[in-house]
Length: 75
Image (cartoon, rainbow, N blue to C red; front, side, top):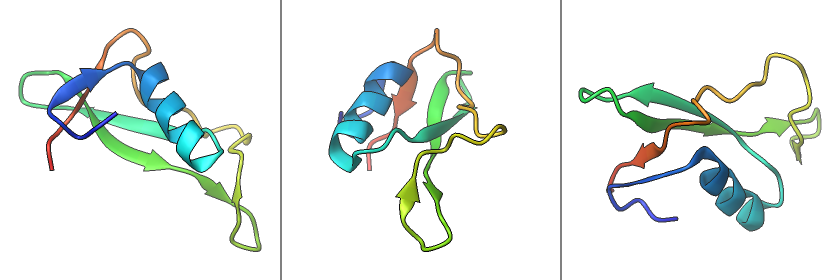
C-alpha cells in the first residue's frame, strides 16, 4: 500500500502494516469534503517499558467503517 491517492480496504491497510511492523494497528478515519473515509491516524499501544504491545484493552477500537474503502492521500 502506498500513499498514492487511491482507496484501500481497512483489512488491506491493517494487513500491510501488520506485515511490516509485526503488530496489528488501530486505525482512525475521518471524512474528507466528498464524504469519503480518509486515513486520519494509525496508532499502536506501548507498555510501561515503551515497547509496542497488542491493543487488547477495551476502548481501543478502529474508527473506520469496515464496509467502506479508505482514501490514502498522496504525500
